[in-house]
Length: 115
Image (cartoon, rainbow, N blue to C red; front, side):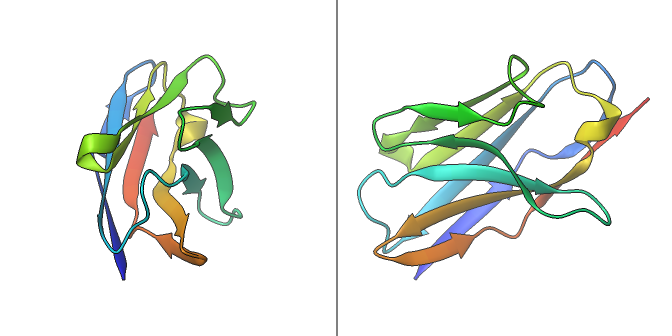
């Protein structure tokens, strides 16, 4: 079993910043690829950013230049630095990893951006 625990969400004004963390524990493979997704009310869950085991990154067009994904392999933790937040970034943000062929999600953390 793998546990993913997100933290760092909250309420912020437009233009502000937040940093999300996702700590992985349990039977996780060494440095697995990890990703952040988000789901707004009434919307499908969408990929925000992903990072490979060697640190290569990929971003949704809507967050390029504003969000940065990074990882600390020693802590089995992935981060999402979110700058210049917009009201349309409001969503529940989820961490995801696939390890040993199994898909795991965190419980999610709410990010609310007020205008």
